[in-house]
Image 1: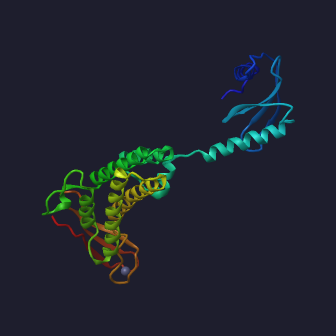
Image 2 (image 1 turned 180 degrees about the horizontal axis):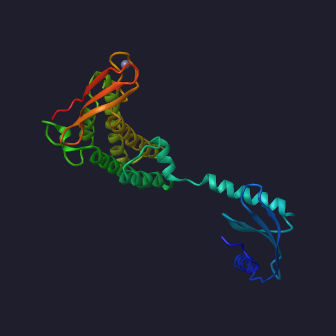
Image 3 (image 1 turned 30 degrees about the horizontal axis):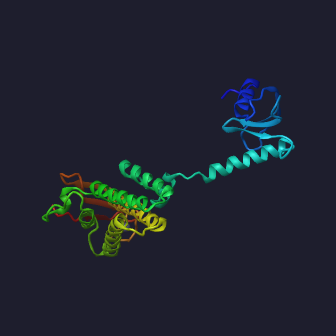
Length: 289
Ligand SMILES: [Zn+2]
């Protein structure tokens, strides 16, 4: 950005002034760069609206402060200006940060991320009961979308296909499909509980006549974390060797030396070689088809 000129500063002050003043004189009184950005404080005199300090700089929004009554010198006005800017920066609510924090920054399908960001934003301005109900509706939509994102028809195996909006069932099939065996039984059980209670709670908020900000906020947090949980399962599945150790020396330093995939593209068997003892471990993934 080019440095601002006398004309820029004059125009700004004349535009901001309540008294339709004219700038008589404006000069940069002091330049600061102790915070890593160059910030200039201008001394501005007007015909009918007194004297002003104007603070501006690279990447620093311009603002003006009256001289005399409150701001005696350039040091003072500079500290004050930078303090305000810093606070504005920190108090700025960014819904995507909320989503990222709860989901531990996992990669989330873009259509889900957009919707999560949207409700994280809505909750901030929700006041009336209809606002909270609308958040419940949005949460339901997110869960249905999550169901569509995680589910493929092969997951039902011999069972009847779930209805398009049956998120609970899709979640159940997904978990059965990917998290097999007794090692995963606690994990399966907690995800099932979380899935069912989140869905039920979103439905409850949708029809509630006494939900407050706190219940709606809980619902948003539950939905967001559930998306993160399913993302975690996918990562566990696509990081197939994370759960195995060498059958000979129990080391987890395994590398894949061969794999075989089914026609659905999902890996069925893996040959893992131990980097410690060179023993080979074969892993066969449970798959109904
Ligand atoms: Zn080994």
